[in-house]
Structure formats: structure tokens, C-alpha cells
Image (cartoon, rainbow, N blue to C red; front, side):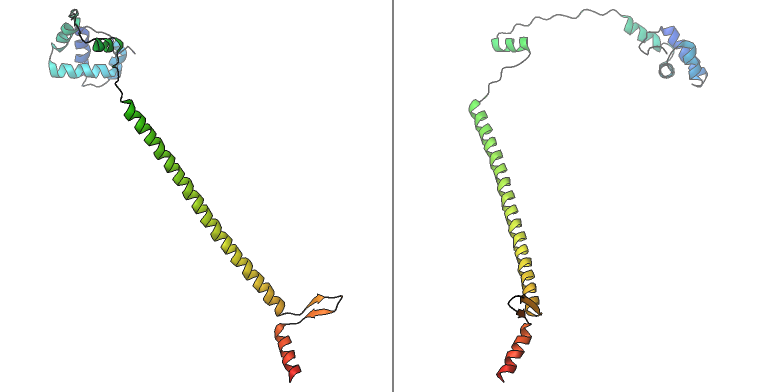
Length: 183
């Protein structure tokens, strides 16, 4: 299809728009193919013709066909040398307060370092507390395990040293035997 930016004469626009309106804006695809104009452009022309009347395209052509008038040139004299230099280079010179810039840069850096240090200290504290809790729970478990093993040894029969003939008897049995021997 043709380019939408293509220039068409006022008579051509009026003819195509009138045909679109006569067909009640139906079969615009056929019109588009016939005149090699996009459907959207035909719709736009038909709408303009409906609203503006028969001379709508002639006024547009008159406006667009007028030759461009040369722009007025204005000479401006700038007395401020810094401003003239800024306009010439397209940038303004900055007058920075270096003391304030250095202060806030150092202050910001110190704040970031303190924040990171605080996070590191919190991490170390939390890991130490967690490790202490885990180790205390682990020690508690080990102590309970040792007590169960000791209680099991005290309450059971077993061999201590087979070569020397040393045997183990439950503590309750040993206490009862000692009590019976004393009577």
C-alpha cells in the first residue's frame, strides 16, 4: 500500500472520501486497493469531508502549499563572558562547595562502614549464641546418654574382667546381699 505521508491533491481526496461516504463507509478495502490509499486515510478523509464540507481539502492544500517564509534572525549580544562561554559550549560551570562535598562524602562513607560493621557484629553474636545453644543441648544429650548407660550397667549383670573373675551384679542385688549378710 501507499505511504500515508504521500501528498494527494484536494480533488483526489474529495473524490475518494465522497465514494466512501456514498458506500456508507462499506467496502473500504476495495477503495483502498483501487486508489492505493490506506483504509485509515480514507476514513480520515471521509470524516473530514462530513464535518468540514466540500472545501475542507482545498483550505488544507492552501495552507500546506504556501512557501515557507524565512525565519527572522536575531543577533543577541551577551556581555557576561561566563554566560557566553556556557551558551557556546552548551553547559554551565558548576561552582561546587568542595568542603561540603568532602564532608558529606566522608560522613556517608563512615555511616556505611558503621552499618556494615554493625551487621557483622550482629552476625557474629547470633552465630555465637546459636553455637552455645546447640553445644549446650548437645552436652545435655550426651550427659543424659551417659547417665542411661551408667544406670543400665548398675541394674544389669555382666563381666568386668574375665581373667580375674570379676563380675558385675545389679546394685539392688548387691545391697540386698549385704543386708542379708549383716543379719
